[in-house]
Image 1 (tube, rainbow, N blue to C red):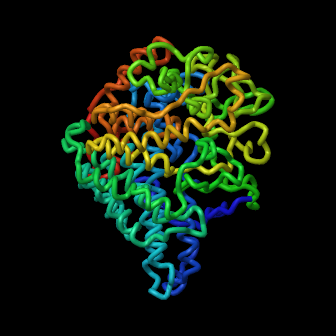
Image 2: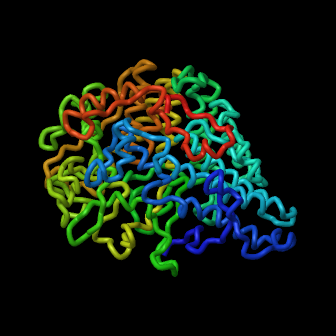
Image 3: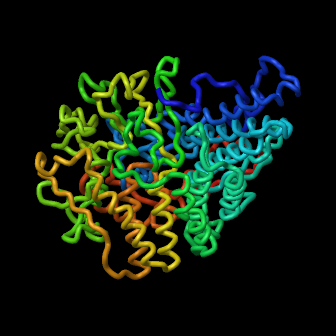
Length: 576
């Protein structure tokens, strides 16, 4: 059993389920005196409860990893049995028929604000203690980090959100919040301010792995300032109006390697180590902050990650009930092809489909995508083929399977458990050091520091080339061709930016980042329009797909939330 901060039994606290029910439906079971509330043991329970909700508030349809919402990108197909299986996510995937009343639009909003409400309850409890509580400042910093995380996830999805920063909101107060009180840039600044306050206080190391460290706050700030840098200053548009150099300099400040190396963080020798469930691989050197899951903790199943329950393939007599969602696209597979120099074919990779018999490929392809003719999860007892085991849809969504979220079927009963759905105790890394390296490379490239950007990309590529511990016999046994080399030429600023963007896609594929990257860069319309044009020749379910600029970059504000806001919420642009 691995140590886990998050318990399976949670302290009951008031939750924010929607505007109309906030504080109205709470039925106190008992009362606590001011003295009892201020006791450190009670405060610590409230803090633990705040952490817990970031695993218990999500589910298979609304994963905080955002895999469900990444099906809008060119990395993945929705999957499942038919287009009607999770039809509201099919609508997101094709950019058609999305309604503000769709359950998945409101469901994620509710879950995220439930989490923020739980954090605010913990902050309020912390604030009641006096300075004799030795961990007061540190616990407050942790909760500011979590509150920033909740707002960050919501802002990436909905753009215009209310910021719930008060710990003492009444129902009237909440319903008087505005989702457009702050400009887009000001909203990012609120999140950054919380994190900067946390960064000053958080320790370099934590005994409990689930608690954020100073490096975790730095990694989070790196990401937030990179989002903030791509300004969307026109309230009537989602277009990028400028790229702010001061924000990019902040990215460099918080991605400084010394912050991470001094705390023991760095790249794993093999990227696959980040996606192994065994205890010895959890919280490795690349995992800066992760959602902590557990097994054998005295509960029925353990504190497992149920939010990936739909992703498991349906292998007969093995993973019966696997739903086969979130399937890698052919476009993504093709992106891993390499040219005669061992480099990505940035402009031409999608001209023809990858053929493992003749094409060179980055080794990360075989650690990211399960492909027919190769072992599933590196287990040679499960060779993938063109059958219903690997495609519940009979090929409608192709036969590729994602590997990063799944677990070797040989580990059923230990690291893979079946309840209502399949679940694993494998941690989900939220901030990975490779992501920080590539974010730093992006800032360097945008600032015109081309060689610095290329050097950082080459760090990632060098690691990729050596990531073959699980697939070392693939060339001889299955005829694939590994070929991944570093960049050695001279490049312009624009070329360096393209190189960094491509490397982000390859390194972070199927980790829920791709769609948000495209929106952040202002590339969503061009990339997805080209993607649909070619991919609809391969799969029929994309025949009517289209991306509508100044609309499909963000989800609409849910109808339920607008109708309960006393007129204080404004719908996002796009004529929803």
